[in-house]
Image (cartoon, rainbow over all chains, first blue to last red; front, side, top):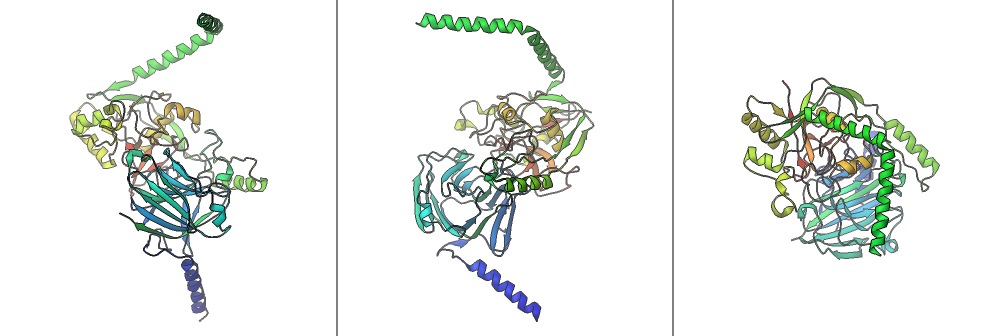
Length: 229
Length: 286
């Protein structure tokens, strides 16, 4: 009996956690809250090839592994025109991001996620982005030490990208040209855990510790997508 | 005014020449060293029937997978966090293991080019061909080839050169031993930038950057290179590679790579992004 009650408590607990937040109407979940089905680790990004992405209580967590080696968790599918939704809770001093139209090696448009810092900024990872954008109004809507929602729309052969944080539009950018390698017009969604350490001090200093402090974590839930024409 | 500038430049050159004269002893010995190295490379060069150049790699040993993660403290990080980082780095450090290369082998001085691929296969699967690059694309590495495609190329090359040589992909350790060219520790960012095509958006003509100490070009950068081994899904290779697996190992980093992964220590794996994966081959010594 005790075991049954305990199990019920655990199950209810998991469901409460997983059901917090909401996927917008018309979106399809691409993270099942149980495992990494539909996703894979990039084995060819400079961020690192063995990051620790795992699922706990309906939440996807990202950590470095081994020490100082980050990485990318990517969708198995490629997307061209889409709206992406997710809720994010990030530790301070941990640099991650949402990669858009990424290739397998992690060259992509990126919405940066770092605190303190430029969370919501549009950047390029391994590509030169013609026109960046800053989420200058982010702090007005940001919930500190809590879940915050990101919605990103990306459409067009020449990318037109829009970001909303907590349902408030931060920016809307149309690039003057497609900056992707090989002029790719589709790619994977990827979540980044930044690297900090080189393999040996002989190579150099590596990244300052603030790029991903020891044990820091990024958390994601309710990841969903709506394909657009 | 112009004349004055020319005179000034002339003076600077004269001074530089005088300094060089004083230093001539060391210059002479450097030149001798370079000549000796070139002679050694020339002795060990082999060119096959389709113009592929190979360099002889002599037996030796190296340490693979030595992990000494760096911890870079700046003023923004408190001492307490730095201390934790040091402990974690120490905990995760790995001594690596010794790999002995028992037999000499020849390895391609360059990545297999689009031209060489076409000579053997009659097609060119590469993305960066035609108007996609500014110079002659056929001298760029072939890419958009799977591990199995590379095996097909090798099979056909072996048939065409029958009796003269036996070709295959390098093992990961043969590749890394040749890429290290005697280096016992990791490569510096300075050296990477001199020798590797990275941080750009297309492949490059092979051999545009400086060669490594054994005369091999583009071991790092330009395209990822397939090796024979299956991938073990770990940060570094195991002393004995797995007998099977989902993917094969990639070494060397792509043209859009970073100084972080354009090192001979990087142990990556397929599938890659198609246009960023090529290979070089080994010629066995019977």
